[in-house]
Structures are given as C-alpha cells and as structure tokens.
Length: 318
Image (cartoon, rainbow, N blue to C red; front, side, top):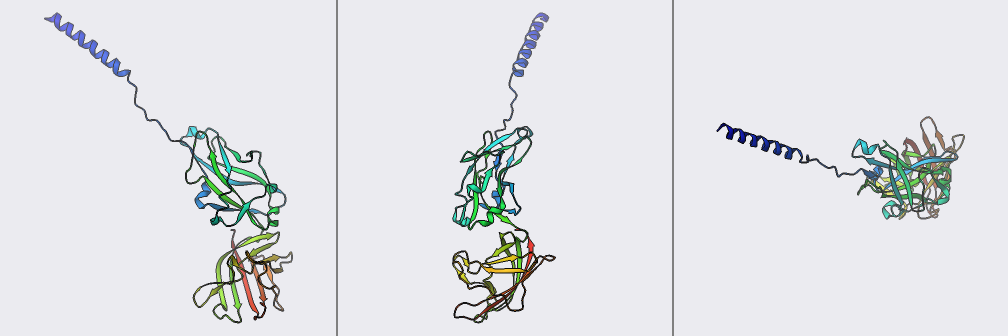
C-alpha cells in the first residue's frame, strides 16, 4: 500500500511541475499604445486668419511666419526629430471671410535655409526635445508699406511621417503687414459739427479702432466718417458700401506736428473733398501721452462745411 501511495505522490508531483512550466511559458498580456504624436498649427484656434505686423526696421529680417506644435505621446518620441511638410495653400487667404488678401509677392521675400521650399512645400523640422518650431521667411518690412493691397500667405500641414496631423488645426492664413512706432489701437474722442444732421452733431467717444502703418511715420484710419448717432446710440456710416469714404492719413512730422491727407476709401478713391485745417489750429502729436490732436473740415459740393476735432490716444499694440 505504501508503495502505491509513493507512486501516486510521484505522479502528482510531476503533474504539478509540468503544469507550472506550461503556465510560465504563456505570454504576459501587455497594452500597446497606438496613439501618435499630434502635429498642429496652434494659432488656428484664433480663426482661419491671423495678422503678423512686423516692426518697421531697415533691412531684411528673419520672420517666424508660422508656428508649429507637436504633442508627443512620450518622452522617447519627443527625443526624436520630426520632419513636417507644409503646403502653400493660398485658398485660405482668398476666402471671402478673410477679405481681399493677395499672395505676398515672391520677389519681396526669400525662404530661410532652415525651411527649404520646392515651389509647393516647405520642409520644417522639429529638433529633438522641442515641441514648438517655426516656418521662417526672410523679408524687408519696409517693402510692405509700398503695396496698395493686403498681402499674406496661406499654409496647410501636408505630411508628418510617423505622426498624426490635426483635423481641426491644420491650415491657417497669415496676413503680413508692417508697423511703425505709431501703429496700434487707439481710443478716439471727437467733437463734430454737421450743418444738416443734428443726430450726429455733438461729442462722442469710440472706444477702440485700429490705426495701420502706411509709411515710416504715417498711419491710416478709415474711421473719420463713422459717427455716433446720439438719437439711437448706434453708429452712422457715411460713405460707400465697402466702408467709410474718408480715409485719413496721419503723418507725424519730426517736430511732432501732424499732417492730414484724404487718401480715398477702400472702394471709392477721393470720395470726399480735401481736408482743411481750421485757421489758427496746429495739429500735433504728444509723445508723452502718445496722443494725436487733430482738427479738420471738409465741404462737399453744394453743402455746408463739416468740422471735426479729434483726440486720438494710443491704447495698445494691435
């Protein structure tokens, strides 16, 4: 009997050993990460079009015209360089919602050596350990103020081998302009006398308006014929369908006196008569408060003279 029990125990021990070996050979279940690094244009969150206003400095400058971002899935992925192809996609800037923006003329900029361009695609590389990189171009901002139209470039992420391109932030239009020291957002306080319209005659304030660079020391505004309607608390627009017809060019002279010129409107050139500074008035700029004091009149044919006095105070960069 003892011998039989010993045989059974021996067989049982062998069975346990074999079973243990078989279980030890089973693969341990692991989870596989199928996500990829996401490449996107972060500024696309601000809309289909952004504006880059360059400081009006002499000579060519390198411009980070487009920001690219990658969200790496791991530290190991971030350690690797990543090359992305960016397509020239000017359909982005030609959409009606963007306004009439034309492609930046090729003769006004050159491609940066970091981002070679083959006529259709730029090559942009994320260096190892960098989550942000830029598409760069080289241009002289002073050439931009000689243009008579809005200009820019459209971009679209086209290829990112080994990574995933964002579905919602993959294209962007960039309007490109120049800005001098007077360029910015201003508050306008004004006093207007209109000989036939009492609803807009009075003292008003426009909280904010953009004044854009038009020369080394000049800025333009198309706001001179947008007035508060005091009867309705709304705004009254005088001019054509494309916007106010009186676009004023304000030039700050070296002695801080100010010259005013009617340069026409966005749709109708010189729709208003010339501006005349009232007798005894000197238009001027106060650099301490960054404020422009301007007065002018205009007299349409067969109508009375309109008088306007403006205090235009700088608030912030645009």
